[in-house]
Image (cartoon, rainbow over all chains, first blue to last red; front, side, top):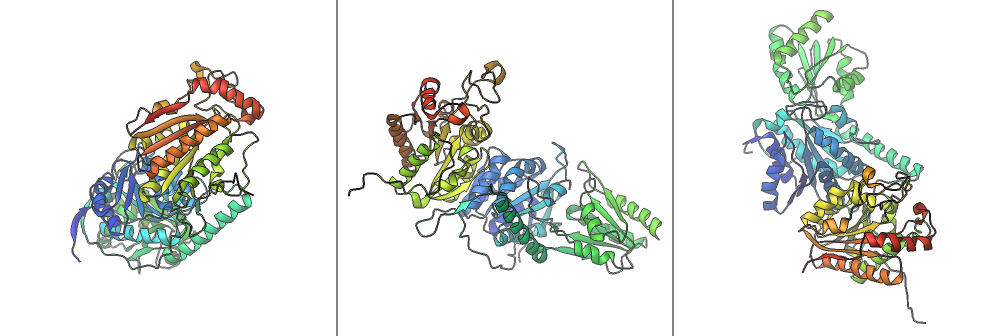
Length: 355
Length: 245
């Protein structure tokens, strides 16, 4: 298939359009502005609607309305903007509506900076808004994967009636790589017979709602969504294990950081260090089984989690490893990207301790 | 025997939860009748707010979408952009529309969204127990203005109809009251017109309905109707604030 050189943010936008996303509601924030700009340019030409909302809060509520009306709809933002969207995301999850939310993460807390970070991991994987809920969260590592996961995200959202997040970062959003737009394998998707499209006299009226005043009813609703999450965990958990077969140390990293770790693996081999990589592609559901599988191998002496945060995913890695092997952490924050040398130095220190 | 009056098909048979003497029921009836008479119930999508009318989705006999505090105009925008030929309306109270959702209503109006907004103004927060609203009158006692609303401390009441009428995107805004039969009839006319405008794709229409809250005003229903007339109407004058061609 033909490859085109694109910026990460534009690749996401094009992938969404090709996946049938006809509605986009957003609000500008760096470093994801190419997504709304691309949508503003392209959507009207394919009969879709781009609307710049007055705030992130409004944008996500427009998504809520459009998703309720049965559309394929997307919004995108970056860290502080996602915090504002958290209110709407909680309602969308509560009302069980499908939509795709892109978070091109920048450094925080607060206004933070505009450089890449992975410090929204907790917010992304633990719900992010109030209440018991989860998003399906994809963490692409290449632009090609950004394309394929964005396309897949719409199907997964429709299949499970659940919001799906693409968790990128400023580096992935701004870099350029050749990509091709291949549709993911077709899933059998349910009819949207729940949508508020006007009942047309042909069916009972539909109500989209997340309010359940009766506590028993609310508990039932939450239990039901968590039953759904179990199915998602079983069917949709995605992970890549790279060079793990005889690794002494396994590095856990996702997104941009995983790309850097891959280049460290070669440099480490030259120094006689056998290093593998476990790269969660879904950070929720998290591939705990994969962590456990490798933690049980005798040749694996230790784990190292590398993140652009103060250590958020390291908690999930520890949950997967369950104390079988030591789990170390190396991270940079503030928009600083870990260097291959920095990671290698940390690996050498760990090897000195465990060998 | 000839039927001279029937309950509108625009409302379900559910029992409403509103307090005795509250005028939400009247406003609901007027909305239901308007949708029925315009024959658009089957393609109507209502957006319910947070506040006293949070359960409006149980009462209007059409597809309904619940929204977060103040966000109904944004949700309605999303619905309407997907379904431009459907009839989309929000039903919002003063806390919802004039406080937490001020940005949403201002910008939906400025965009000229072809939706209908029913704005119930009873000058107080009802559902949360009688706190000061942006529409609370100066001197009015509420749980959070226990000595009467004082402009120096709490600012002035907001006249939403007057404010929104300044926006070019707005097609129609009228303020009505439901404190007696004559005014209820006028309110019905305004609400029906606001929906008709949407059918005719004329753009953003809002009807502000002066309404009572006997429970939180601490009055009987009859006293409330009188208080509305004597105190609210002079500050919030009835009438058409904007009507395009």
